[in-house]
Amino acid sequence: MSPRVKGLAEKQMAFGYALVGDENASLRALDRAMTYLAMPLRDSDDLLGQRSVVHDDLFAIFRATCDIYLGRGDRVVPILRPRLTSLSSSSARTATITHAKHARAYANAGQPEEAAREALTALDASEQLGSLSARSELRRALPVLHRWRRRDDIRAVLRRLTPIARDA
Image 1 (cartoon, helix red, strand yellow):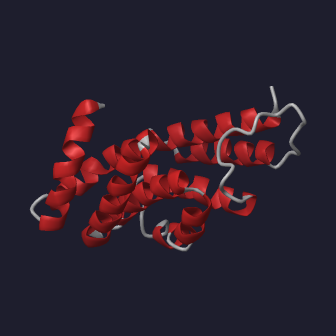
Image 2 (image 1 turned 180 degrees about the vertical axis):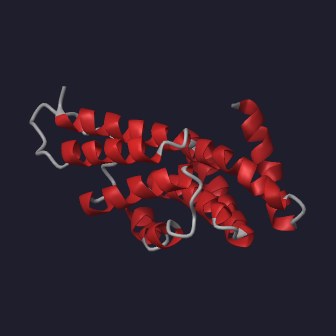
């Protein structure tokens, strides 16, 4: 198996560990992922995953995703925000998924106005692109967004997200 495939598998494992709250295992898997992904491509390697993200940003985006899944937001928002413009110009799909993650980061940080704005941006784009990954990221934000369900902006997000969550 190629180092690239091993790296992408380790990245997914890091995300999984973060989703179940095991930060140490997540960080170890992320370190292994980056070690594999730093290895030179072979001629026979398929170009799978994250082709639109330059290598220097991979670790930052992968780590930010793990932090979001671990319930963090304050340190994630400043990592993702400056990358959104470059992601938008290189890959609409990756940018949409990142907007969805950014929405949850804002929610985790206790910033409902910003969370709603990012969620609506991601919802609009995911509908245009048909991005199931962005919708999945937005579904993960539902429990956090429900804290502010009485806010008009959050209600607007929840109205659009709830049918998506039911369809999953």
